[in-house]
Structures are given as structure tokens and as C-alpha cells.
Image (cartoon, rainbow, N blue to C red):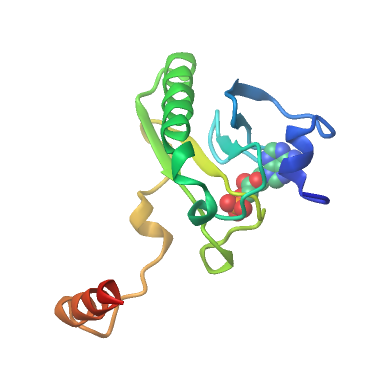
Amino acid sequence: MENCVFCKIVKKEIDAYIIEESNNFLAFLDIHPHTPGHTLVIPKDHYERFLDLPINLGEEFVKIVKECSLLLSRALKTKDFTLGINEGPYAGQAVNHFHLHIMPRFKNDGGKSIHSVVFNQPKESLEEIYLVISKAKQT
Ligand code: AMP
């Protein structure tokens, strides 16, 4: 897609530190790393969101995420990671080309768990929310 920074990386119009590549995916270092080895995994074709990613790419996607994680694990001597997707603007997605963040984690690195991303406690009970979801499942 024109003017998409990640499409430009795929087309090699912009440089990136590419660490893994498969037929349909590319993994490269985030330009503003939050941890050493902070990596982004993207599809080569332009899909805006995770929900747009075709199901048939699922296995290849999981494979490259695992390969990157194992590579980073060997290189940076850690087995711990935070994996995350900012899906849409309310979740903080800034680049509208689907990407998964892989953030290697280290002892006493000052970071928190994924629970610290948001704390918007529901007013409804779990049962009420569950009923809303169950109704949606029937439509
Ligand atoms: P998000 O908020 O999930 O959309 O994050 C987008 C990420 O893309 C940010 O962490 C940016 O630092 C990263 N980013 C933006 N431009 C580039 C680039 N040219 N090369 C590598 N990473 C980039």
C-alpha cells in the first residue's frame, strides 16, 4: 500500500534490520526499541489488522514468531518475552499494517506484565458480560 512504512520495508524502499523472513512474513527490529531485540513481525501483504489476516497464513505466522523468539532467546540469553498486538487506534495501533511485537524480557528490567496496559474495570458482573457475549454468538 502506498505511504505505508511497513510496505516500504517489504519493498526494500526503507532499510530495516531484518532478522527472519518467510514467504509471507518479515521480522525486523523496531526502530524505537522498548527492550533489547524488540522485534516486529509483519505480513508482506498489507493487512491492517490481525482480524484481516487470512486464516491460511496462521501456521506460517506462528512458525516465524516461534523462530524469531528462539533466535532472540539464543542471541540475548533469555527465555522470557512479552508478545503483543495493538489492534486498532484505541489499543494504540500507530502503524496501520498488522504487526506483532516481540519484546525480550530480562530479570529486573523494570517492565510490567500485560495486565498493566489497561485497567478499565467493567461495571457489569462477569455473568452479565458473559450473557452479552453468548447472545452475540447466536447472531
Ligand atoms: P504500534 O503502536 O503497535 O502501531 O507500533 C508501531 C511500531 O512500529 C512502533 O514501535 C515503532 O517504533 C515501529 N516503527 C515505525 N516505523 C518503523 C520503521 N521504519 N522501522 C522499524 N520500526 C518502525
